[in-house]
Image (cartoon, rainbow, N blue to C red):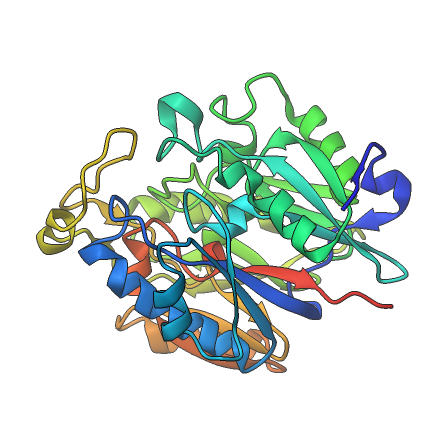
Length: 365
């Protein structure tokens, strides 16, 4: 692995869409008892189900600590590669590299800075030093060249159509707890230089009470160029109502990098899900980790889905809205096999499928 001093833009690289072909998917095994209830076992069960589902479509590598290696190896299918690695948290979408490619199909990676979604004052746990090395470790394992991204940024905070358009939120990228000294123009130039995008669509904020500060991957996502799925609610008393309305108006009033208007498909959200006493009481209380308080609303969204080669893994919650969301998403991607997975146990940690999986694009020889 080389760390390059140039920029991806000058070298002809850009960020491909997640719905493009993958070489493999990456995950990190959950184990923190100060984040996950009941010793992390419910979360591990769902992670194993996700990895098994992905393995039906493409290769999977799961990073795991030395403490949990034997447990993870026993729970995961033999086809899943398990590698020992050190890390603080399992959110590989946010700590791993952003893979980029050029027109010849060569792949490189951008390693952004990570501060646990807010640093010492507003971050969700401390320390995060091992997480800040995950991107470099993955690129080293794969012998992929690295660029050092100049922003504090997480992969869940951006979404691209692969044709020059990027979706993001001001509440994350421009948050003083990440990047206190930049403005929109500086951020846009950085996205252009390191991700090769030409048009940035800024939404104001993300899903209600998303503790990342409002990642785009819980609110809306491209499913193909020109088509965006958006979290929606018709309940005007729900705080999410105003957020989704605001996002819809912004999306409807803009165009993609080619000057074309976007098709916006509304996906009705599930009923609010809250932290229960039995779960909260089973989490270890550790200084530096944000506590899990009974009655806190969890960030449930069907938009936190994950593309695989030929398929799409969609979170469900045993909610009345599940079936409608699955139908609407299936209609939006008729060429993909929809794989619903009950991921309610993951919400307790603050994320879902997309937050916990990272795609590595297919490279050409």
